[in-house]
Image (cartoon, rainbow, N blue to C red):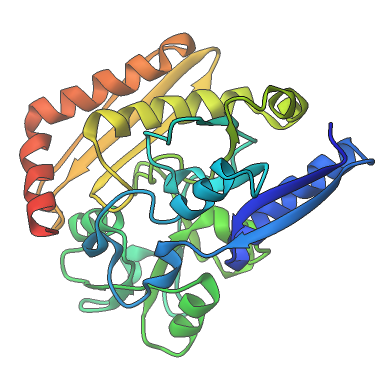
Length: 310
């Protein structure tokens, strides 16, 4: 391992916390290596007054970091995998996927202990179309409104009473030491998570095989298999994190089990199914399940969403 490394990261507290974890792991394994965090502001970080679904495009939180990686201004990048497009720029790859934090969404409320306990007309905040559609299917009587900003901003809005409840990714709260704010984690049966939620990806240049070899100690096979299935599902749907799709894979006894979902934004129609098979076929399982959901009517749903967001 070389004596200095530069990690490209978003400047948000969560992104820096995640990258600091990677930095610490590298420095503990290689005491002679000094790791520097290079904070980079992305397009998605700059746009805070518009729902991401209206912004359009993919890679809102990674493009500027990838540009720095290609320019050799940084040696590696740490991303939340749910922000990473399925197609990467030539010359780059996700070489390492560390162990996954909880993939589940978290329900936060200072008033109620569950979504089912919210009163009719209660205001719940999220900007995710995936969450909105599943919430609307569960509780069409709720007032579901947009919620943007970093985690501190979202928690402040909740505490100020602007919302009766909010939905956040459980992984981010865990990583920031804010697990005590979680009222309840939502099981996948209740709310299917975003593709690769809770997983990190370390992006490298293809030609940097020495660094890839040196970082293998951070790679987690089970997480990588699950992420491969979920991202193959995403690739077939040609979707991003701001469309009403979801997928969650698990690996047990070398069998990968994947559940996927395509939903109308208002929750009136949700197409959902599962598929299992050998872990070596993770990507094929994701692709097959996605095509199955498209054939069941998912294509018409996604076409309507894309047209609405143009």
